[in-house]
Image (cartoon, rainbow, N blue to C red; front, side, top):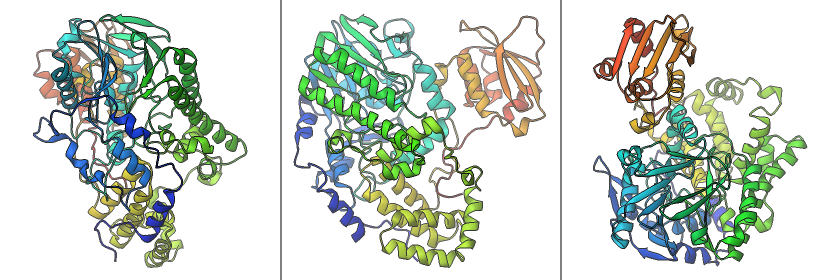
Length: 637
């Protein structure tokens, strides 16, 4: 029986990694020069301490990456990890500065006439506050005059309350700019699918892995996510609606380019003519990005993404000397920027066009993933490499966007669940012992992909079979060591960790995926969407209830919520209608009910939440609103 301990790389894995050294120009050190260019100051502290007395961010955790390499890490990923270790305050150009390496993303500061304009205030309040403190320590205290969210992902807005207060926003002292549709997209990803996405993100970012040569080394896009940060959200005060829209903020001209459906459903680039600079948000970074992110999200539009980059080239290239983004390091000079943008444009276009060419020849998405390859001139550019997204899973995303999950083979139309399929596979293969004997031979031959696939059937058929779990873990581990993609490595190694240790360390942990500030930012329509997702339909199949909700502090019409046999629907209330329950509440109190952060009894003790009518029925409703667990099983049934 194999053991539940972590293993080093096998001879087969070491040969795979050694062979990769000859495929890329590792002698090119220009990215290291870019990553260190313009450095003004080191981080004030090596550790950023959070509200629980824990290290939200620890710069010393990656000291092991100072070595030349490791035989358990893909050399290209090791190179990217070393680049992402550059941290501190950097000058992009005179008047534009970034703090890098204190979060998975960058925070950008633009010097206005009186204060700072901030682009993308990181993931958590602690890292954002540390970045603001660092730049103010270097240049002197300046007020924050405005904040820009380039797009709807948490690592670009979650630290907002670390740089401004809600009061400053509400009283008009600070404006928050965001692309149209930002709030809806942020809520959809972080609340409606929040619990499932958070659990999967723990795999994607290696949150539970040790930081060492056998564990997490980098995400490709940045080091990792902050550990249990204070994630917050304040709704935008200014929606950017169209490309070419201009605003002057604290004496600085901002011109926006809308890029919806690229790296996020709501996203925009920013041209800064006063500085001859272009902020590319997360549309162009120093890696191939995700068309489908492994944590789960809507599939992105590769063709549109490519065309928006071309629009950048046409509209802004003659006017800029520097291009920077909310991850990685800038590029300077029109020649370098042109080559970079053209190659990133062609990267997404190539994946899109070649996927659909092969699909129209009848190949399925798994067959396309094996067949597709980038042109050599794109393949050899480090900023096009598979550090975050991969060509393989992005090709599947393009297929899914056009053709969906079904490959048209009727054998795949209604398959058994993994448990039921697993039992049948094990029986067909002659039982558990026969399957394991064959799988061990495949492992010795270095066929780790096949070992994972076939032993997974036994794990789901017999989850207590430790021989199966440990062998699958060993195979997953080798695939992790061979991965150039940070998220692929983290997925493989986290799966191995949970197989060896008996499932998720977070099993049974319950609660909301998002904090109260998310709920405070929501409209009534968004809050009722959350209620609909939480409603246990089968348990309420015979339950009927009508509720009118009036928000006393929002200029929104009274909303009628109906539960009809396990299905929730909403519409604006009509005066004089009879309902079972009338709720009159401030938005924040109703948000606590919708999000499940408090019981009905606790909320009713709040003077801002009043209920008239059938309280018993409302109590029944609350008892049938699910609270989700973070730690559901992934690699076990």
